[in-house]
Image (tube, rainbow, N blue to C red; front, side, top):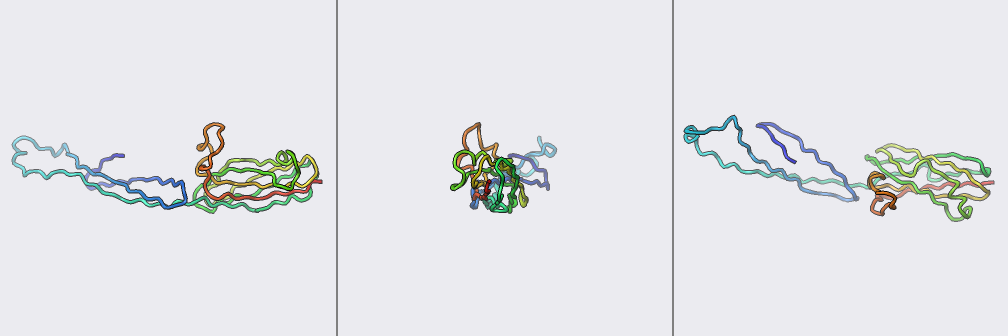
Length: 200
């Protein structure tokens, strides 16, 4: 970028830091200053010859080292386990958990629901549980609710593991079309909670 300063004037240089890993980042920033001639003080003709020889105008370079600390997203889920208890088949049970962000920056995340081993076999379990969103964000030092609806179609024990995976950026900015999410899009440790129900 470029700019211009008048005598005794100052300005601010704004830098943006967007770390993509949990480590220390450092980089130098250089500023080159070149003196400019002021047309109002331009001297020509015999008067110019009478003046002393002008000093050679030289460029001056100053540098500043920028240091930033990248930190992984820090989220947790409360409660870590949800027990729906005894539920009648074909009835509906609703519930929610809180996704808490203990960092200072907004965390983007995805939600994945998986039927745990030992539960009802077949495709009944995956279809019985629905969450209200599979991608979202939670602002720094804030909480976001994740709601779910459970509609069991048959008797048995239903067990689920729900994983909340932090991302390195906005979900829509990380994908192009229907391609699956890449491993490098994930950032930070995923958190999980369980859901269990005994359907009669």
